[in-house]
Image 1 (cartoon, rainbow, N blue to C red):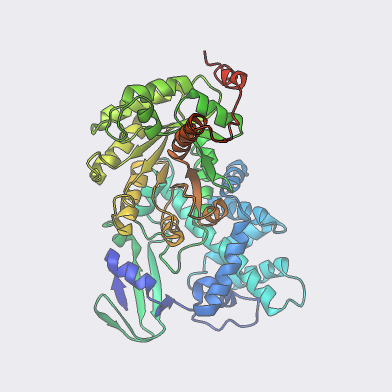
Image 2 (image 1 turned 30 degrees about the vertical axis):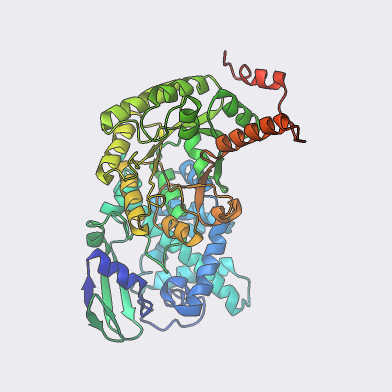
Length: 507
């Protein structure tokens, strides 16, 4: 047996197509009657075309499940053993008949799913198959049923382990996953001869991957696997764990756990924020460029702390949710940033955006930015911290982006933001490792909102786009009038703008 516990070696082994999950050791027997058959039929223990086909079945099942709905359902469920509660919730969400009986059977199967044999578990598989497929089921129906059962079995054990590790603690789940991963080891077998980290591995050799040890030395945990075998149900597992742990979500945080991404327009004064809120946007952000430019100051130079606070106080008189772009917190002292966060929260802000770039176009030390995040969460736990990294804008590698975001998650960030990232593959690579919601800056030439939703993006910011468009429109109108050219001067009327300042209680 080969054993790997170094992060790079473990990741290389997970990505090596020659190393596949250890196949069943026993004959599957008659279809639909045993744990051995189940192992031989699920995506987890297959490779190549069968793996792609079976994984697609699981992804299709999960596509109809909204994580926030699972979170609410499991939190409101009956007091039961954690594994039973997880499976019952998933079975109900998937529309399975008799979810209680399904949960009872799945917990029995889970006991031997990863190795071993048991007559009671074989009987449980047979009962589950009988519930899920009609009589005289064809091979395709049996395969679909097996992968439904496999989905429940894997959720049963892994989610329960995560909840147990995180119980009675307010440690961010991202840190729990790194320090106490629910899956501590993985086994692979060589389908053909290969080489990993300079070590020759012969066909048929067993490879043991120590995830727990590997995770300790790298910020991006391998808990949910690595391409091409990233767990398709990671966000659903995290939602179930959150619901069981009963960690509260603010109204603003809940907007990041919907089926479609939160579209966040960014305002620069009260009128622009109120006008956007009047159009039904669920929350409003501010744009640091707009705030700075409006008073003749540079953006990103920590020059607008008072203007930012003043705007937050004005927005706080309204009835809409808003989050504040605070550059890098206007200080490199975490306690000063935490004090700013307190003042913003007291003014009514639901969130804060903190970036790790500096005026000299360098990135702040990752430990410093993480310390700011931790200080803010310690001071104002209910304030949603969106941790922004400017790695893409400053030309840094994707590897650094993932590492920085992982550290920010583990420091307590509620969401992470990567402006400049628009490549679908790059987005997918990040969402496959993140625990918290990913925020992307809208790009007119980039993926559509539907595409971003499919990639796992949960928030789409417009940044300074609206402010820059407003300036361009104003200049275009003025110059058209001056030059006596036809122009579209459609606009809000005086009374409509006047009403924006009073409709939400503003003076």
